[in-house]
Image (tube, rainbow, N blue to C red; front, side, top):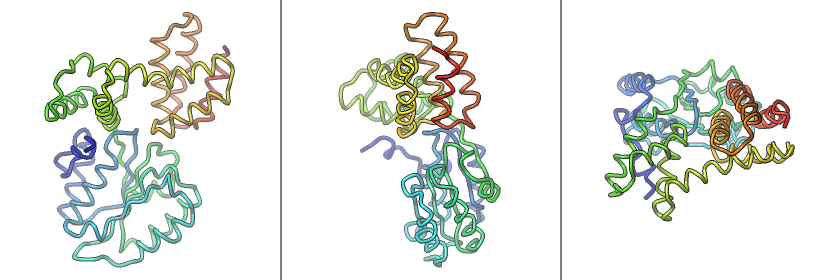
Length: 304
């Protein structure tokens, strides 16, 4: 069984690192009320897990009949909102629950037209349904939806917390041969993404891959992006950045990965300094950058 599923929190009290949300969620569960909610932040911070826990806390034994999950990045069309989501929203509840709950996961993949249609459904069926929206990039959610939700930023989990949770799971799984130093380096390379830490760690143990090799493999995607830029291949670097985005990285995470690779790689000092300055500014601007803009920004500013 996947560790990310086996050790997924099942109660609000088990959620760590997002205390600002848990406090409000416990109040909602007690009062059997909640607003529409927007959870945003980088991958692996627990947004989807928290949505399931909150739905269970409010809907209880009737959760299966009244909780619906839709991955908005896979099904981003306007027609999905007009048919499937509208059908769920206008249907009555089953059992003694206050409303139905719809989780729209990875909402930043949904088109603006679909988001505008969702806004109208959110207003029209407010007596029947509540929405939990998750996304990595809040700027890709239209303002009209943001303003109709309680907004919560999920911060990357602190390094020491990810290390503590990982060591606890390794102990339960009888894998105690890894040193704190090796684990620390591995966790640092994944920037507080607990889900990815556990997924890749479990995969490495099953396949017999060392942590050192996994860290090297994680940096290879950034090496490929840098190589495309050095070779003045803007289309190639854009394609590599898109691959990282599809793998669940945000633009900010890609900038951090590029920074870490540039620090460690064998590159002429003057060129390395220029790359670090450009990547640093790219990270600062990352909330407003698309993958295409990031690729052209680094390509243009580095001037290699």
